[in-house]
Image (cartoon, rainbow, N blue to C red):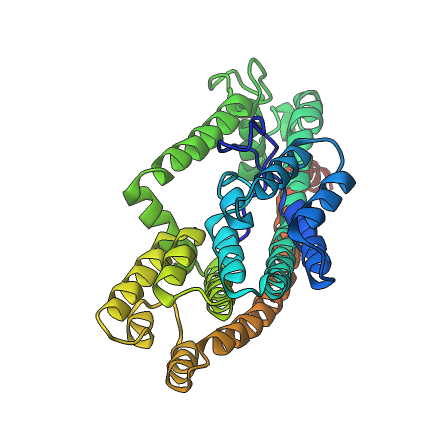
Length: 385
């Protein structure tokens, strides 16, 4: 799993200590690709690091490359130097480099690692891009409804108050109109839009964001507890719309990470431990731990994966076949490629469903307000006729 993107923080320190610097996935992917090309060309690792350090702009990552160059030049291996920067090079990255150094195939491992990170970054970008449209539409809809409530509905208060009803009596408003005016009155503090003095003054425009923020921070705090993490991770897998995409994404990430590690020569038990730490879902982490324990006892990995409820029969059977034929790494990569395509298809289908749904909901909300405002006028015209 690629390291989480975050702003650079901390200092590079020296070559003897660890750092807390983090860099973006894009930066690390580009570095891996460039280092793989240089190693494939036959350049020594020290010279390759020096070239990349010289091409990198001044910033936190340049300090990391300087520290790597100094460590390797002083006699440390590249993997040992990378472990001093866990915010940049996660255990997956460092262990693959270590396996490449041990087998004398560092250039090949870096090429695989570069391909792995590029595909992971591409999949992550697709997931993030699919969420942009629904978020934008939701924000626009909320802003439009707030504008109507704050600036449009208040203007009709004086209009309704100045219109006499049949027989000179006060105009009797329909129930829908009273509800819309009452909601506007509840939203804005110190405002009264009803034709009577009944009811209290509202602070909904303050309470709604306050309640939403409270729920948001409450969920984040609960998610930090073991029970909360279990609940939300299980909810992500079982939710009707997002659940199938989440499951496919997790399976693809698991298969690609494990397959890449195995093809790089990392032992199966060590690879499973690395994959478990790279997965951000505790339900799948528990399943991986059971697989680890089963293999340690001399069993295969297909049976515990099938019992987890995350992997479907096709994946379990393909892994079973891969174990029997001794080509588990190739089978896992094939599963990952297949599931990446399915994630792309599911995301497109999800967006195609969300787009008209959000537009219809926004249209219904605006139409309800417009209908409620013009209903009294229609009733008045009918009474006069």
